[in-house]
Length: 114
Length: 115
Image 1 (tube, helix red, strand yellow):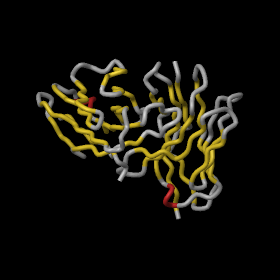
Image 2: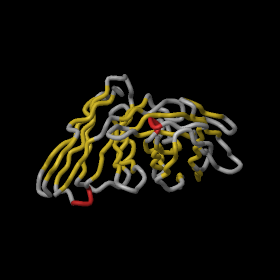
Image 3: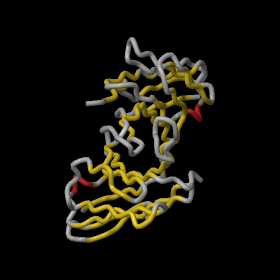
Image 4: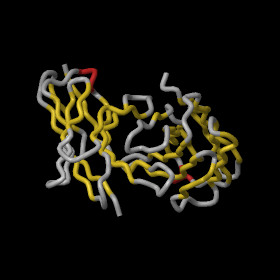
C-alpha cells in the first residue's frame, strides 16, 4: 500500500467515449501529478497541482482534462482519445518540494483506446 | 532544458552478479537526483536519492553517488538477487518557482536477474 490509490486499474475505451481516471491520497500531501508511461519512452509529466491550483500543463492535448477538487483527489477526464493515447497513467503526490520530499506513486491505470 | 539519459536495457544478470546502471543528466542549477524502481504491475517507488554533489544515496544494498563533475548518478549493487528484477528509473528534480518542483525521468532500464 503506497498511500496513493488509482481507479480503475484497467480501462478499455472507444475513441468516442468519455471516461475519467481517479486518484486519491490520504498522506496529507499538497502536490499531485499526472504522468503518462508509454512503452520505451521516458515518463512524461502531464499536469502538476499544488494546493489544488494547476501549476504545470506540459503541452497536453485538450482531450485530457484534469480536475483537482481538493488536495486529496485528482481526476483526469478523457474524451475523444486516439489509439496512441494508450498507456499507463500514473498519479503521484508529494509534500511539495521534490528536492526534499519523496514522490509517492499509485499503481497506475492501464488505458487501452480502441 | 533539463534531461536524464540512462543506459538502454534490458540488462540480464545472474544472481549475485555486480550491477551498474549508468545515468547522466543535463541540468541548470543544482537538482536533486533520484533512483526509482518499478516492480511488475506496480507504480514507482523511491529507491534512493542524493540532494547535493558528492552525496551518496543508499538503500537495500543499492548505492549511487552524485557526481557533478561528470554529471552522473550511476546505480550500483554488489550482489543482485532475483527479487531485484524490475525497471529502474533515474530522475532529477526541477524546481517550479514557489511551487515545489517536478521530476524529470530517464527512459528506464529493465533488469532481469536469473537464478
